[in-house]
Image (cartoon, rainbow, N blue to C red; front, side):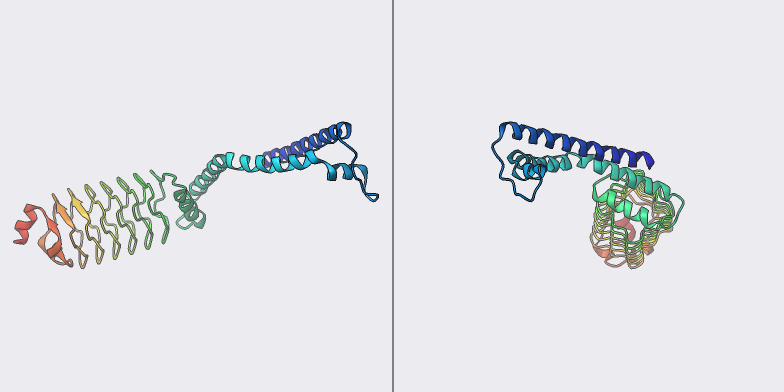
Length: 268
């Protein structure tokens, strides 16, 4: 912290000295080669020279342009520093269930399109967080409370969501391929058009979830529940341990799309 302050003061002092030196050179040049200045009786010589200086006016306008250019030039470095500070905030909250700073840091990183792949925040309270479109592949989110969260279009492939709470969350168009969703809670979640291929669905709770257009391929439905879940055009291919009783507890199950083996079971 002390070094940062010293660095800032050094830059400010250097800038002031540089500006004074430049202004002095300009005034000397104009005093030698310029014409007579219209000075007021009440003002000093130096103030008169500054007020009447044509070159200083030009330099002032040029300085503004340079400042704007430098501002945009340094934007990537400022973003890099901001992202570094955000990750430090997330790391410092490790082991804490609730941290508003971590909550905000995650949202900020995602808004800047920074990948959150491999994020490790087990048991965290992230209720209502907005991580739409986030790259959360391989993230460790076991036991995380993501109720009412916005995870639409998010990439959660290979993520660990064991016993996580995603009730009332929006995961429309999300990718949950090969994710571990065992004993996860999706009560009343929006799972429209979600890809569940290869996911672990042991004991997963889909009660009243919207599963319209979702795709279940090569998954195991052992101990999971679909009670009152909406199955409009939901696809089931190569699934295991999905009983007719489980299917018929859901809504619109007749409108779902099944592979040959399930169609035989349903006599449908």
